[in-house]
Length: 230
Ligand code: C5P
View 1 (tube, rainbow, N blue to C red):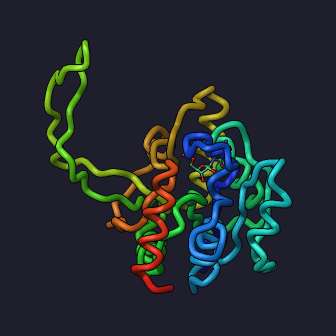
View 2 (spheres, rainbow, N blue to C red):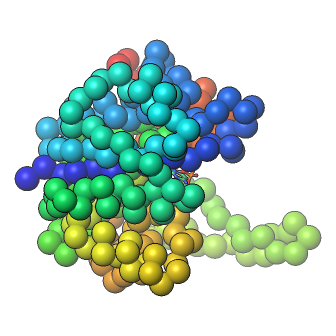
């Protein structure tokens, strides 16, 4: 069976600066970032329905950007936090109740087909899967006064990316439990799974699968796009 997808795109993207509006609607190459992201998932043979969580103010932006009016793509209004936007996206899939769901950030337009495929493959009956890359930099914990307190071993440390995939019923239940418990501070869904004691398997991520957070990331994205000649 095909995996459903929740793409979260309701953030305001203020960290990108310059007040140009939400970064998922900035252009890289000839299209909006979110159009690249949507296309990657729409083109994948193992992907079914896609729910995009957008901000209430962004209907026009979204429909202008995502002119691929596929009947496989629907929108839902997102929430105050990423966690809430994911929960609303999952709730929108409740009636169709897919076996598996992938959750993905709109601001990661470079999820390639292999990455999407191996994340779906790695979802178990009762376990999730997370695209991640080993940490390359040496890590320092800051102490008082801007000095290095200590060096943290990077052995076994990974940086979490998206997509992250889960059995649909388990991750929806985990999100509802987190909400009911007032736990509203999770920054990714693997952390919610961890809290709910759902095992999560690490899947090799991709160094190109960057999250476009800062203004300078946009020019890096243009470089990646040129390199991939797509
Ligand atoms: O803010 P952050 O960098 O964590 O955003 C990651 C993703 O979550 C982005 O694609 C952003 O649009 C989305 N998001 C959301 N709803 C929010 C905040 C962020 O869908 N309230």
